[in-house]
Image (cartoon, rainbow, N blue to C red; front, side, top):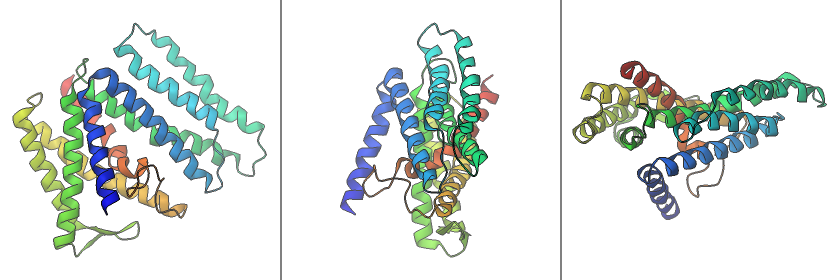
Length: 267
């Protein structure tokens, strides 16, 4: 328990610092974090006897990440992003030289690894730059609402949890915990709106609702994935907490939808 608490505290400090130290630190941190999560996911699917194309996958992820981040700092020619097309075709070509009974499983999971472990971080990065310039309010606010949801779901679940939310994939989650998480996340949105007035209260509350609902679904999806390959944690990089995907499962589905919502109300 002590190890878990220390790791959790250091995790929060690093996360907050990455957002407060400016655009360059924020960008570098989340690019690296995305690549580490990608590597973790690729390592996991190997346990299911899938052979993803690691080199091509990392090339695709790097092109996507650079194509999204560099225009905010350099005079980047977007035509270089079209290199992604031959790299993605490389998945198919490389499989021709593999001796695999299920080649399209390898190709499909290679694509899935980019979608699951890279695009959510691209969306989260884009949330912070939604107005064109870096704004840590949205990035920090996102995580404050996500953490509030997780904390509320845990506390309400422990105190009042009786009705299982999705027992097949996560036996401990309850409907009472889910609604408790929604309540605490919306409460956090109300508090944030008084300090960060980039958006009206109603928009912060909608973001909180999206984060609560799809953050919970992201957790369930990751649990479903781990059960399908019979592992408890996605990794061991965070003592007492498991892997990076275990810590960011709430972001994986919620960040893309929060970005879409912010884009629709901003432009």
